[in-house]
Length: 236
Ligand code: PGA
Image (cartoon, rainbow, N blue to C red):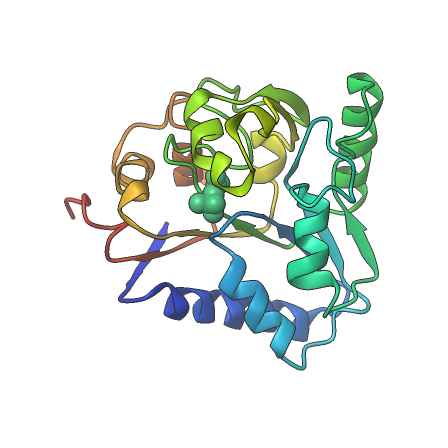
């Protein structure tokens, strides 16, 4: 794992931006694995304001709330449109369909999309419980796309985006850990003190399904771009 610690999250997002640019310059048809949440917001802003041309590229998202339609303001489809796609048209945009109640059909559909579009560069955040995507602690490292029961800590962390806790969906479709690990390169960004324990466990702890992000120790091309607060519990 290549770990770089930055004073500010803006600098970490700039470093991620440079890797996106490099990937796109090398291959205009690259497949970018995309994440939502607060962590990648500045990166998406930098991409939006740049002159990069994604019109031949593919964006493929990690996850989506179960039960929300793409036009729901808290859906991740809406987030992607608002933060990136409205400024940067991509050739293909894929995200699980949260409004599809048929779990077997939806997970099979998304697994086929992932198989047909191998990810070149994946961007990840990390949960305070070390989840990646919505793969909560205990998820099998062999998992593919699945329907997840969100943990209470994830619901608590995400309720800030909703009017009340009751409105936070309790389930989500998520790309599985096996699929995330198939990306050729991965960038994980983490900012702020609430991520410090997860970051330490990911980097310095054992590889265990109790700490989903710890599997990244086994990936050959991982960049961890983190700020000082998220790095504050690291020993080395
Ligand atoms: P955040 O979420 O970027 O909103 O902190 C990250 C995650 O839960 O993976």
